[in-house]
Image (cartoon, rainbow, N blue to C red):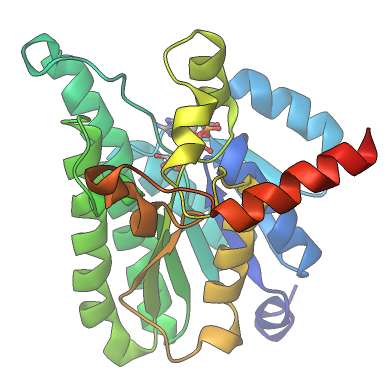
Length: 277
Ligand code: NAI
């Protein structure tokens, strides 16, 4: 394929592409016409996806390893050319443990994947994009970066992702590369589902503090990603866009007794329910 033909084909890399938000982003970018490379460390899941979605170039990759990222970038460069879009959705969660029970190996692993992994991807592919004068990097932060929660490794690690997004937007902006982040609220993906099923999280609790009284779907996060990578967002760089069903707006209402559905709405809901019975 000639260099000109390659430029016509828009290439997108999605890390953490084998599950949850990453997988929704893969599907959304495919629908938008991108040639998608899905990278993930979960080899078993990649084997299934290779059967189910052969139109995606699936690659096994640990984003916390500089050596693996170097090899991955060389392969992408020779097979597909410099990507137009990189979405860093690879990440791991943290259990809500007391401060004195925080295991430092787990702490470091969370930073290695969530912060270091995103930084390594941004640095490697951002520099290649800047040499061509185009490209968009998307990091997946979290509302835990914007409000304190008892997740002592995960929250500060995500705050560092926000800060890195802003720094890199400044550094890469003059060459035409945009860098933004999305901060999801609580999204029903496999790790959150597993915590709910194990009784470690309560779906009601996760919804109650959000203004819209619900969790977010992976597709709604993918929609924000699709917007931020598109030309519709051509003037947007260095921001973190919350997609949280209004969790940031509602989470502090506990001080005043929590969010409440108005009496009028409650009455009309009851009437509707009675009408349906
Ligand atoms: P998920 O577990 O469904 O997907 C994460 C994917 O990342 C998995 O396929 C996993 O194998 C992969 N991964 C983990 N470590 C990796 C590594 N070292 N190298 C390459 N791939 C690796 O989780 P989910 O919920 O889709 O999370 C995606 C991102 O969104 C994460 O950064 C997470 O912190 C963030 N997020 C999720 C929220 C939620 O409520 N689900 C809320 C806020 C942020």
